[in-house]
Length: 361
Image (tube, rainbow, N blue to C red; front, side):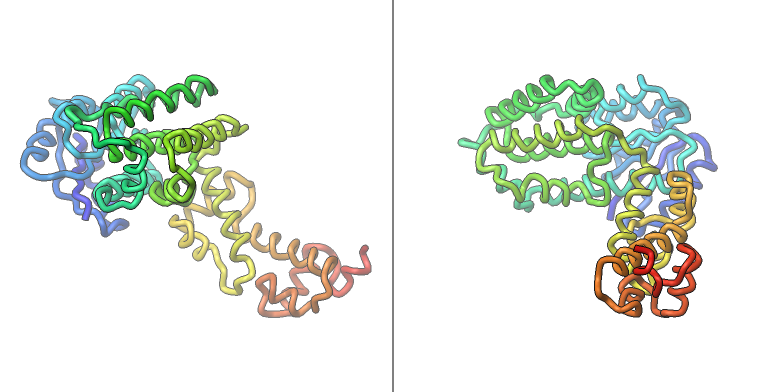
């Protein structure tokens, strides 16, 4: 169970955040609701807190001051900051203190839950780190066990990587990866290297949404630890390749575009199921049905239901033209359990029944 503290100087915002989280996430235990920074500090001194959801501007101590306190005292508490201002300087300062995410008010329910889920994934992977086979694999890269007198400062990794990505500065990114992996290999240990890799991937996800529907742990496993990292140079090559690939993207997907892309991919995978509905799509991608309908229409100018119908019929048209399958089998293959309804929908879209498709060639 993740121990969470909510801190905001406005009662109704605290209450709304508490309700959203309580209604949607059973793996989170809200241990305290605080109205200012001093209350947060007191709470941190009395109980272990995994995650802090906190407004940046509060009475007495600000959210940034609390983040600074957590950073300086090396508390193992992740922070998601909330702000009514989309202020770049605040965001940069927050990154310096290792803040996990920075959300601008008004915050949508989906944006909040998505940020919480990603943060919890990092927390849980960190808790499991000593038992993780990934750590054992990274340990094989070290020729000797280093005696660590001081933990490596990883707070600069995320802003540095984002800066290189924003400027498409490939050379600086490559040098950054090389210098840091060498420093870690010479002076630190496998756990530090794991954290370094995690911060790089989190940085790329913030800018390019590389995780998509995967968790951070799944992405690391599939894209790094399942590959050949028998020496530090090969690990460097993988990290460089992922970063350079991101720089080569022509466009950066917004969160709404990413959700639209996930919906289309889900349709491609499941269109042949008879009982496949918008509710099923929402369940598959972990979103609310009404929300994904709104987002999809905003991105593509069409409803999910109409897009699913069009996809099925276009697929049927290709099969009619390019296969020897019977019409009834094609209807079944494309998600129609009723041949008569299929024929009706086909004629409504193309102006003729499926039995005449080959005559149109």
